[in-house]
Length: 104
Image (cartoon, rainbow, N blue to C red; front, top):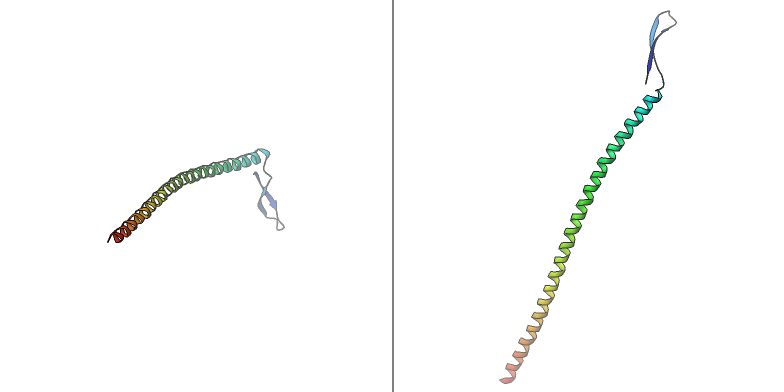
């Protein structure tokens, strides 16, 4: 913005310095807008980087969760297998007890 300083007569005959502000020139307006665009582009780049970092964290967490879920499923299958084995063993024990009672 350009300013023009001039002296102005006031009623008493004294002069008073007055600064008149003029409208910005086209080049000044272009410079101001260019600075604003540059600032917004830097802000955008920062936010894009933060978003990419957050996305990578989510991907890693998702991979970890998938691994944990896989481990849980494997462990459930092992537990079910052990339960079936125990149930079959209990049936065999009961059959042997009944056999022993019958022999007495």
